[in-house]
Image (cartoon, rainbow, N blue to C red; front, side, top):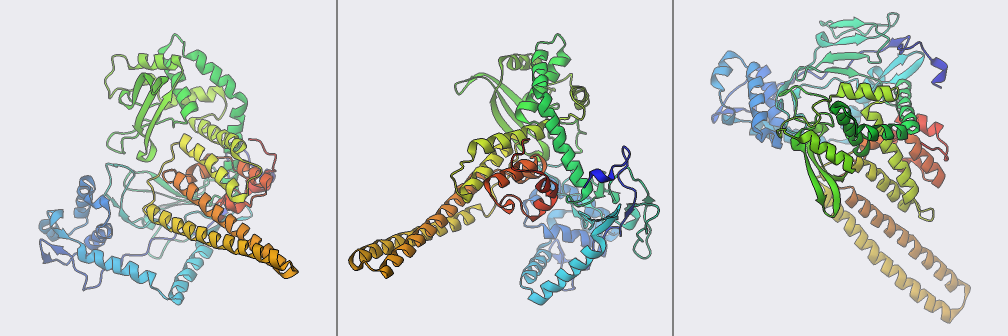
Length: 561
């Protein structure tokens, strides 16, 4: 389907038409009876100041609002929105009382839950209408779904981990901030009445439809096509094809970096050890970052001496490196890994005469590393290694773990275990869900009830057998058969529940979704499903099936990554 519409290098489309973005609804001032108090006294806020105050009030129960840096950033930005009288009165955040506002929003949330069926349907219909009007575009004769056509409403920035900018005000995005991208011969979207776009572009070398710059990090945000669209699917397919190309030359690359551990040049040795980490541990490359702009997170190239400890021997293993650092999104990476002797000796050398805050690889940065990777194989980056190692691990694990005689729930448990091996390799963690204990208890009580049911069914079967021995007629024989089937059915149900419990327990702190969506060639999973007769919806939900439609069409049961 893709092959039919190849364009010259860099051209992404010839025709693009869309309706532009949907803006956040305007601010609705609070009812008169909802009060804000300062220093114990009621104070009426101006509309702008009130809107920003509601953002804080809505987060009152969140631990963010207790963090010093969040409070400081919020107060500074809030004051910018106040009138001069408000500024001179409100000088201390601790004297502000948002509880009345907070209770009002909680009551509203409750009211939404209690809505009648008709009211809910009304909202649903309105969302459907917006989706129909704004949620699709036309790109080269195809009607394509747009991923995120609604612009984020204003609010307070949270950031991941201990982000230095948390609590700052995310401004409301106006039409005047928006760049529209469409083709010259299309019907150009019109801005809301009384407004104009910042710019209208006709750039067919990019795939975004709308863009703007957000005020906190100064990063550019885009409205793009849905993952199920042709352009995204093709990009996804190419990503896995690049990883498959790496498979052909990975041995050569590994031999090369092993040789480089002995190089006379320090720069080459550092590059080779870093590459070994990226290959063996699926570390990210790790770009340099501006201090104070973002949370202090690192990747392979930006590791500091303080992030690793060397143990000539640990827990009965030789040459162990202990890693402890914050990776992307402030997720802690903690791992103790036995490495080859040469790597260990090199690390000792790299750490000589350095302070804890010095760079481990002081002769290396991501651009040097990426240039080297590009020389080894066209299109090779650290991410391609991650994708390759993730996919190859899944394929090997599925071969090892799948027992042909297992029933479907047991096979799915094996699949999830293979997926877990990948998530652990990529360090995709999560905090145990807040409801974890509760849902485990519910599941356990279901299991207990099922066990009682099974005991009853077995007793009934036993007495039916005894009965049949005495009577020896057709009717009692049939009763035995049906009781036997009942026991089997309940045994299967019990097994299914027990498998579910095992799965949940093992999955408590691991996030499977990231690797499933971004690092695992979907054709491996599709082929596995086809081979073992497992319905694809047991592995991929609806959204994932749409995203991977290309793989579901393409892969047969004998597909090898």
